[in-house]
Image: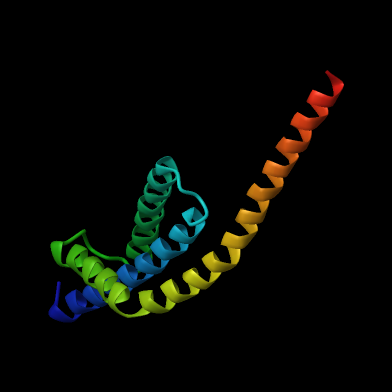
Length: 127
């Protein structure tokens, strides 16, 4: 394998790492409204599976020879580059979305409490 081919594999793997960072942020947006630890485990497993499928698909389409250590390192470098650059934009947008969802969830809890109080009053009036 020539040096040009190795550089090509490294760059494509780094782009896969950036795509993996974007995928991780997208999946973390799904778990944002939930606070359960199980949801976090499930979404992390989903990320691992989806990233593996993404990387394998890219490696087959680009006809990578084998899985090399530098390709794995390039994925990590791409992921870190994403975290240091584009992640800030995505985190800002996620915060905006969370701040829009939070009042809606709070209103739902208030409505549930009112309904529960109303049901208790109706039961006590019947007795």
